[in-house]
Image 1 (cartoon, rainbow, N blue to C red):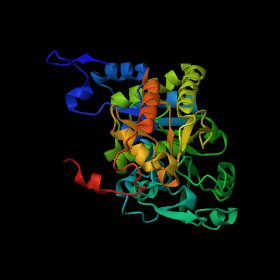
Image 2: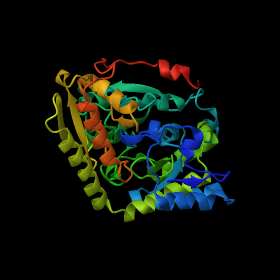
Image 3: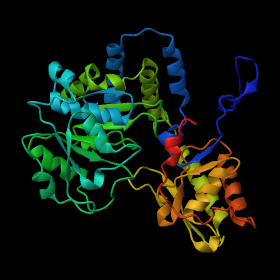
Image 4: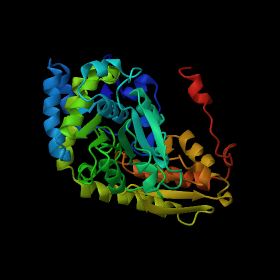
Length: 401
């Protein structure tokens, strides 16, 4: 949308800042801005921005909304899901001992300070998840192997220093051979160990607590389409202990009044959202892209469900040499085009990538289809069309220049 800037020019904020007008078919990715914030959240943030408010009281109001939507006994808003993980773990360590809260993360004397995680759940979502554990002053205890976790791997890992078990729900995790949430909770609870669930990008706001989790943490800025934030919900005593970490390690993770109000509004908008209508629009985009790619040499496309059972599908595009592209080369060509199209490319070394329709503006599905056909039917190929998938961190090291 065009808006008038302070100098009266009719430009978008991206133009004024010199940012590329990308089309996001990667999904709710933090590196791309997470999501399109719903109007209800934008309005609440704008209204709250000029107000003074007692933050603990605002968080009490948030607790009521979070508890109603999730079925938890209490809840609060924090900076993001990663901070929620650190706060929940720190809370499991300190309880409401205010002096212990101030002493974290380096002084854990007398505290339980080990967190059990299945090895196939120790993922990187832009940062390693075990770093969120270490920020609390805790030590990660891996259970099982990368391909299988048995019940005894978790049971025998629990010791007198075990503060919590962390269970990760994400497309990044190993999707086979791991213990289910129910199994993990049963083993931990038998020894009095609480279970914390990282459900950052999940639609299901109630199921994880119903299945046995003690604390569940969501991102407010992914499918909920709120501002960047994290939502912590669950057992009141554990939620209280996690919230008190704002007096300690979570001081550096604090959330503003605008984000709290915006996340509350996004949660309430979720109740009224036309989920069926959104699903139909996403399916239409997927079918358009699949039809566009039909019959193109070296390209096979299929619609697949979300691996963590969210009610959404993506288009998986397999790229073979007959196309005169590799998956990495085709993803790069789309990103380098006009407009740049950013695909879900975290599996390009396996010869495929995905198109995710959940963050499209009106008309963008058609642009993506046009760009796909144009790139794949052009006579010439970019110089890096056949490039292999390689890890390269050099771009990160050049920031900000």
